[in-house]
Length: 230
Image (cartoon, rainbow, N blue to C red; front, side, top):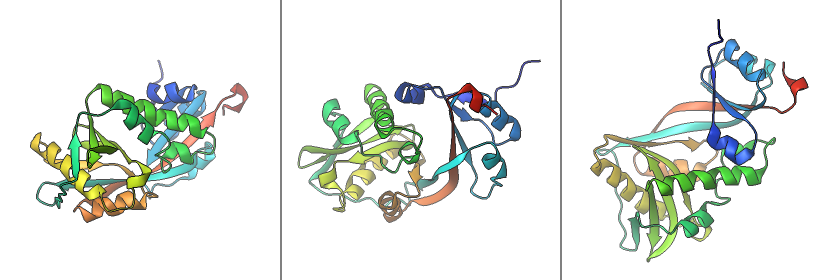
């Protein structure tokens, strides 16, 4: 009888890191055994209160904690500014320049086994895919591109500001505008996923009326040589 697959390939990560990459579909010893018998980089998401002993036994190490902000139209605090506008007319080159190196809080940047340049490439590739699918709002300040928000369905999946626009209290205008667009599309709720280390993003979502749920601890494992397989 063939083994039930408990891990899945993540080709978008393979493209960036040039090694096989996988995500575990469940937290179980059977899934951990499959992962550690497969060359490449593995990711698993587990509940914060889950017993982590198996993870350590199988060589997984902690990288990040993700938190899900979510909000409905009734709770959203909308804020407007005449100089802050959004548009789906986005210059790809300018957006990619803002994207490159912006995601220092990401779990791939926190993974000491991975090159930072490859982690940057992962987010650049993701933005390119979103741009091609026309799922990116450009964030404009006085007509100049200041950042972007990429979305998938009702989720804000990738967002960044150019450094000169950070820390000025401007994000609330753009974020509330993009959330408003998603509500107009018919979604009942808007959500995102934020690293617990990204305090600026968490404070932004809290200021707009978002609640937080579904925390997940992210663990990684890297196996590049046959003799390292358990």
